[in-house]
Image (tube, rainbow, N blue to C red; front, side, top):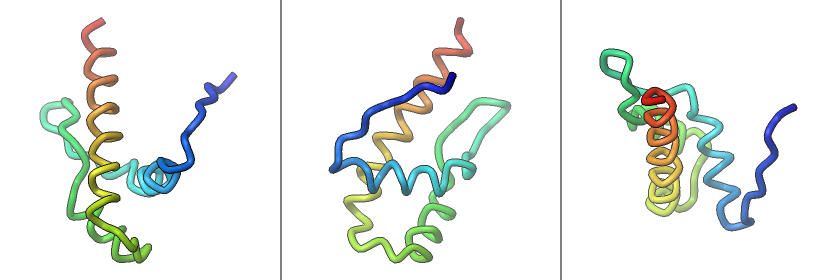
Length: 76
């Protein structure tokens, strides 16, 4: 059964954008470092993101949480 999460309306654009770049990770020796910002920039241009600074701020919050969750899973 898949997990279901509620997303506040204001965060929905960032969640959708994250889903469009979720395969664009940089890693080093198997450790997830963060998203490839060159790919993120290209996708912002492609999707014509109207407020790229706000989107990037929101995206970095999601990115940091994903990195934290994956790091915690590896510790266990």
